[in-house]
Amino acid sequence: MKIARGSRLLVATGNRGKLAEFQALLSPFGVEILGLKDFGLGEPEETERSFAGNALVKARAGAKGSGLVTLADDSGLEVAALGGAPGIYTADWAEGSGARDFGRAMTKTWGMLQAVGPGPYRAAFCCTLAIVEPGGVELVVAGRCAGQIVWPMRGELGHGYDPIFVPEGQDRTFGEIGEDEKNRISHRADAFRKLVAECFT
Image (cartoon, rainbow, N blue to C red; front, side):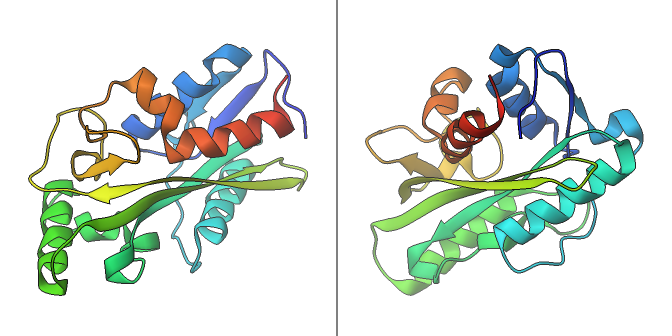
């Protein structure tokens, strides 16, 4: 599957932070990036039990609803001491009354780790990207960024669990690392390198 310069690509997310990351990563390839809100579309229910399955659910729905080649991701945090949790439920841990609250999610994660025992707490951010053409051609790639969970939260940058995750080889959290640097080392960047090799020229 090849995506030419000047093409329009739907990124199947309503998350503005995530959309901005995709726009930055894809900016060298001359592709117009659109989000679900540009088509009045919402995110479908994630019914699968894997990152790949849920990424495909979102990409297929976006391609069907927009008529465009659609890129979707499903990503999350896997903490070794929690048996890989929260995993595909990473965003769900931020749910509660009102909007998603990742401060609540991070506090929950740290509380569960304290109940397990002393650290260090090995973890990895995982990202699976699925790209689907309206005609049905599909591609899936996966990326990973290993690191550890720290406390207290540090940094105002990024989104999600970034303020408690220190990537391997760093002494700063993703919440303290600027966008350009994060986009070179993140799980999403790892997956994107594989996607670019397959799809972009």
